[in-house]
Image (cartoon, rainbow, N blue to C red; front, side, top):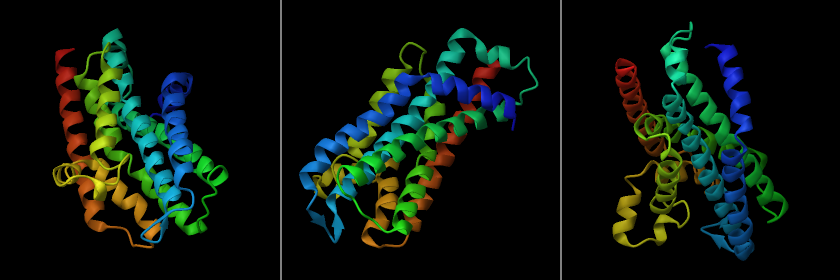
Length: 243
């Protein structure tokens, strides 16, 4: 790991306030509006406001993880990636740094959303449940970080933000993040099970229902991460060969 390059990228990432603010504010606002309507309701023994809080946190972490991959498309557009190849930076370190940056971007939306849930909606959970939900939600951003890499190598610089936004909106809609998959029509429920968003929701929400982690869901998420990661590596090599 090239620490100097990572530090430089983190500083540059924090200056991109538009992506950071959107991924933080959007889920927090949705939580405040929607969650406030169901503060006293329960779902299978779990508080509905807490359920929505976890869902909105997942939406924010997804958008942050996918959106940060867009920097790759911008770097390709200005030729920065070709300049980096003249440095001692190993190609694998470049991709690893981008994944780490995506995971960093996935963290603030979770923290802010949980703070809104606790302060504004009065969500009260045992400490162990908070930790379990937070860790599961954060690690669940991995497949979306890998997807962000793919988008960065496939999309054009002038359309990467639109492509990223469309993808995570569709994933949230059809993956049961905005609307519980159990309440969807039969066809949409089957579609949801083919998305990584559905499975990360299953893992992150399970502590609310005092359930153990769903190993089947974790295995599927690992497969999605590996698949997107291999595709990103393939696109990276193709891009390098053209340069």
